[in-house]
Image 1 (cartoon, rainbow, N blue to C red):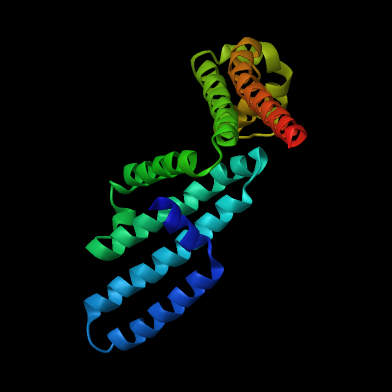
Image 2 (cartoon, rainbow, N blue to C red; image 1 turned 180 degrees about the vertical axis):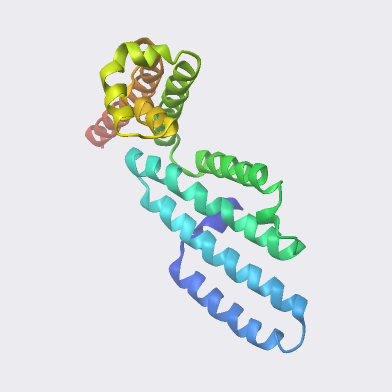
Length: 218
């Protein structure tokens, strides 16, 4: 069932015909009922955005592009249900206190969705890469927050130069976070990524060997 839906959404011709039909229906129904107009608008928006999202997924066929997809697309995709909810309840949810946790929920669900639609071996490496990057930043931030003297030991001269330029404490902190590396902490995180990457490379080698063996037998 899901494969049939994806095949339909991936087909440019079917999607174009469906959108034309829906727009014609929208024109007719808009003169009769408001509820029907809203439903058709949601169907048009949903079909259009699903097609765009699926198209971006199909083009993201390498680890690098999947990393880019995971970094950018969730911000866009998570906004769509927020806008729909905002229109339905008419409660300015974007300005509501629940907007942030709700947005984060949809953001996380986008990543879960990505795990099931991308090639497993590639998306696993892509997620491990981003995971290592995020944890690296969090680790550096944690150390700097609880041990600011550590910065003076490593970057005393740099801090003096920055303070001389009258930058704010937040700016100094941000710059120093980008400069610090924690050898052992980062090594553990990136080793995990390297293991996943090696597993992916080994699996690809096994696939090539199997293909070559089958070709020889045939």
